[in-house]
Image (cartoon, rainbow, N blue to C red; front, side, top):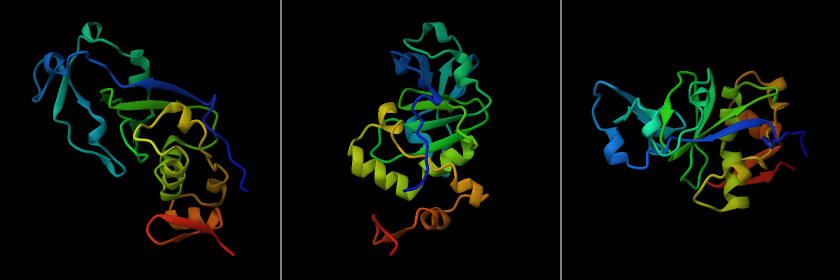
Length: 182
């Protein structure tokens, strides 16, 4: 058993932007008065795909929008909402996202947002998420229960799957399983 925290009570959460009518408020090419916006399917563990969607700047016309300060936060984590696997993106460029992605802004967790993104994208945390929750939606309540091993970064400056498994005293067996090292 390794010391860990959870995100329960340690983050601000928000949904991506709900337009109410993507056909009306989103365009497939950059047009004056429109901003680039990303979809959940644009998020990969290695970054974002190039956006192919642009949204009106007139947010008051949209169905649902979190306070703009959350989307414009200096740093935030964006994650795919419709997915059976965790897929997080560290955003420090105030990017906008549609409601197929959600965001979280952690506080008082003792590690950087980039480090948190690395942990949540790790193979073992993904495996744990799939075994416990077995769902096609990444829910806040589920994310708030996952162990966040902040102490790992006191031993390792950079994240790697290999050192994380070593820290947890686990080894990978086959493609999708782990066991405790004996």
